[in-house]
Length: 89
Image 1 (tube, one colour):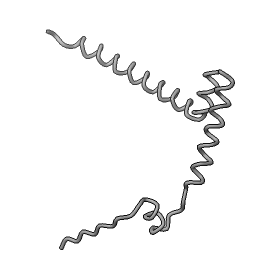
Image 2 (image 1 turned 60 degrees about the horizontal axis):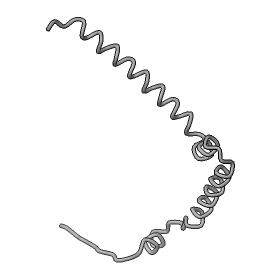
Image 3 (image 1 turned 180 degrees about the horizontal axis):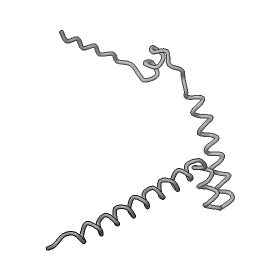
Image 4 (image 1 turned 120 degrees about the vertical axis):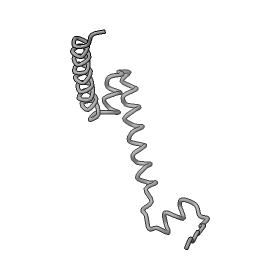
């Protein structure tokens, strides 16, 4: 048996029907804080401070990712060189 139900409602109405909280005010506060931090960093005219304000915890992750990627590239480069020595063409 196949049953199709179509309900025509806005996202706001669906949110209320499902009992989900209205996160609009929270999102407005978060965006205002981000904008305040961005303006503060721009006023300082320091690109490094601007990047740190936007991605403070993420920079360490990028460094770790970069080291991981470099190490993998080094290992693959070593394997390629070793595999060429044993083949005769």
